Length: 96
Image (cartoon, rainbow, N blue to C red; front, top):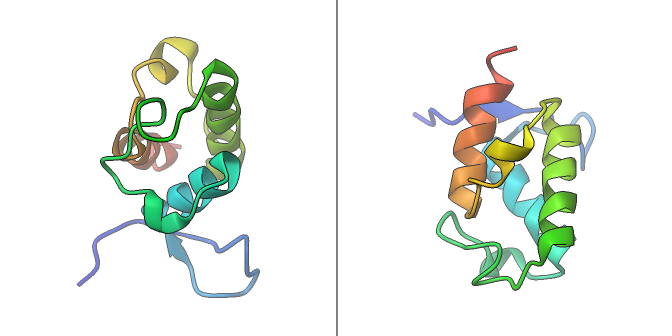
């Protein structure tokens, strides 16, 4: 049984819910202009995708908007990989 948290599918309103992981990968793919196939939990924003400081700020803002959370700057600096972003969002999105 799939234990991943599911969220409403904003890309297909009324469609089946998607996991936080699926949505984070979609956001990263869209923001960084890469195929979803190039994005995994191990993907580093800087080392693998070439993100600069502006890219990382934009990603954090997208995550905050999509998941209705606030990621403080000191926490955002610790999020280096897609997996770390997923873990942070899953822990904090459900705490509300």
